[in-house]
Length: 327
Image 1 (tube, helix red, strand yellow):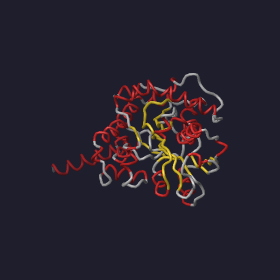
Image 2: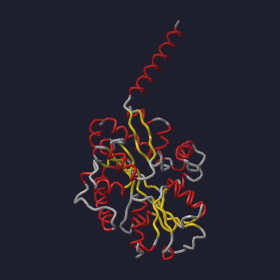
Image 3: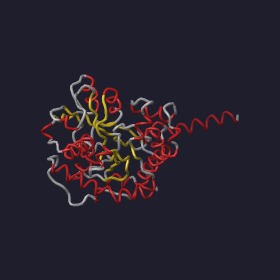
Image 4: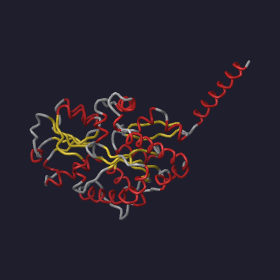
């Protein structure tokens, strides 16, 4: 009798759980599919459990696609690069940066194809360079060309998504590409890194990926937003505290590889190309650096004809309150 009652209790618990999941608010969260620790938490269902949302993770090819989705109201919360975020803010899209995903280092680079005839920066003139237009990679590329004194008209910049770059590279239809992982790792199999975004950042062109949200959605879902940020910080902390254990044959690396399509053998190196902030660093970085980085990015984009207007102050597009509440 006791066993029978126990089975009924378990069945009721499962039924209630399934009912709660079915009734949970569906939230579409945008991402670029970078091989980051967050994919471990996603695979383990931690974000769903923490937020109470029925989450659909939607992969976007570029920041421009994210901006369009958020402007239309289709997506309320997404990962977004600093360059497209500066564009969105300058265009008046109602978004706020509330958490840093990572600071970009060698995870985005200018890769030149073997046999392209490019051995030094001067060799880029007249060459075909592919890049996702309006992305952080595009901003880094323009910054590098400016630093090297190469006019953009002297190279052939071709707008392509990462997947298109991968295909064009295989066909030798392009000579170089500025792109992120996991595609970057594929290009390096038949190419070499000319320069990374991290090196270009030292010349005054810093880039990062952050998490942005519609302010009204954030206000309506304050507890879930805090839970989302806390879960993200915990995922990054697990990596930062256990780097030596995150080897190619470890469970978290395999989960990241399976989720993103990256090769497990390459994921540890890819992770080294990112700088992840700790929970205690998030709020301070947002307050001290984010708005200034967005302003300088917007100024540069306007000077290069990418946007028409620049805001005087980008602080209204940054909100450190959520990050500080969970540090």
